[in-house]
Length: 68
Image: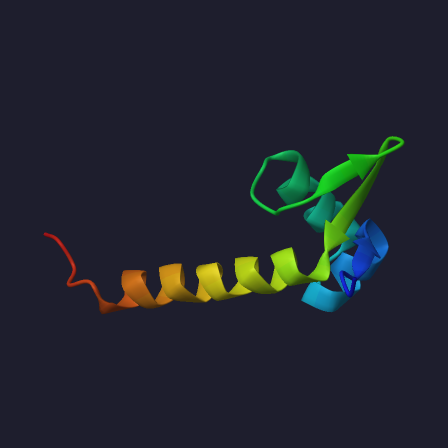
């Protein structure tokens, strides 16, 4: 089993975010995480998939023509 689990502090550092921002994202259901004993935890693989999804969404938004 090679699933690496990260804490909120570690995922914030990994994403180069403030801890408060990472907490807001996960609390709002925008960042994949789960609670263990009241503390947020994250699977590194899930975070990497989430990053790729965000990149695709960003690419789709920039490639769509503007609506007037």
